[in-house]
Image 1 (cartoon, protein in one colour):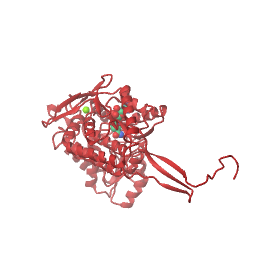
Image 2 (image 1 turned 135 degrees about the horizontal axis):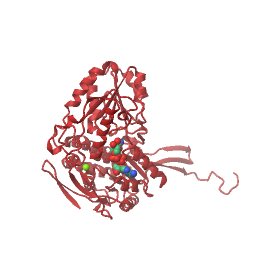
Image 3 (image 1 turned 45 degrees about the vertical axis):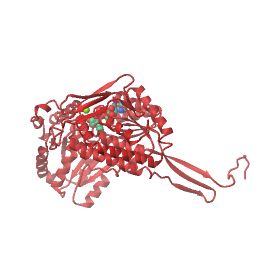
Image 4 (image 1 turned 180 degrees about the horizontal axis):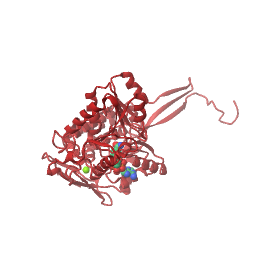
Length: 512
Ligand code: NAI
Ligand code: MG
């Protein structure tokens, strides 16, 4: 039930591969497994247990027991806070192991996994550890001397959490931090492409002191374990991050089962608008990072760039140079900015979008297969894709309308602010949006006009654990991070209290 992976740095990474239920690792009752590849080489990396509906049901029973006996109804906020802090400490102690494992499983550079994803995840757990004892209700005056009412924010119960593969540790931390701080117990399902780091986090959670059943982690296929979670009759809430199509199906399962609460963080096709008065060099850097960071596998990737006509030539020549300067290759090399995409399927999807862009008449400014042709033989079968810019784009092209989830930027131009707003908002999504302008009034007008859950001004894709994050329109609903993220894991109980000496209602049916 455990495996040792030798990483390219020579480190031996040992961890359990079973389902994590009730603080124990065990195989699936049907002995189901799934194998995850190393995206940099295309070779198999590890095989782990994969849950069936029966296994999910075991996890739910453990979580329900823990909710009733040790965590939701019995723990104090300071106990929950202490366990979260301890978990954060243990992750910090194991940061290099986790970063290498994450890189091997996901393909992102080790430095990125370590210094961005995991550092932020530790911070997230600590943020929610700090909020655990700050969950407060209100008193609402009713009648002086006789009646009072108050509210109690209570945990929701057993929560299913289904996460994607683009930020496996970070999505894990965002979801568990808020849920556990508020007193919920969880069934977490990592993505089948990246099942490994969650298993190490599970082991550390025992050492952090979480009682059995509070945290359950079931790897498995979306179509099996994911479905079992979203249709389970004893799961009270489901939090999902992933594609819009899967989000719809989860909502449907929730509706058809026990009407569990649902929060969805779905995809995007986020616009970035650059006005002629922007600091061009700064904007070039942010625009590049906005689409190339994490290989474009980011729900708020700035994939539609809108340039004011007058700066088009200068901006694009600088942006092209920037794109071509990024090092693509070995995720274990500190100089690498872009590793492989997470899977062969994602690589093929991105390459087919690039092909469709060319076929539908967009102009390829940089990118294409030649950009990755230099890769050394070790990485020849890796799932690499070229950082790509298309100009002369317009709505109706697949590359403009659909989420690609890769390092592919589409460029359109505009003359006026009104035109920029209309074009930027021309999408069914509403997750992120960026504005570059040195005119503060113009930035504020854009903040007001853009339909997105987050608007960045003169920066892009920067997040903070204290600031809520989530979508408008078809990018989903509900918020993660911040106090809003915690509130999504509580439900309000209202209490009406009559403490007067005499009943004020004719209980015997006569009038008073
Ligand atoms: P997906 O949405 O199918 O997978 C995300 C998670 O949902 C995984 O854990 C998966 O096992 C689970 N899942 C899949 N089907 C399920 C079902 N019927 N019931 C319950 N859970 C289910 O995304 P996928 O197929 O990995 O990627 C496809 C596209 O989705 C990407 O190309 C990208 O456009 C988008 N995506 C968006 C993400 C975001 O952060 N918004 C993250 C991952 C993918
Ligand atoms: Mg993998």
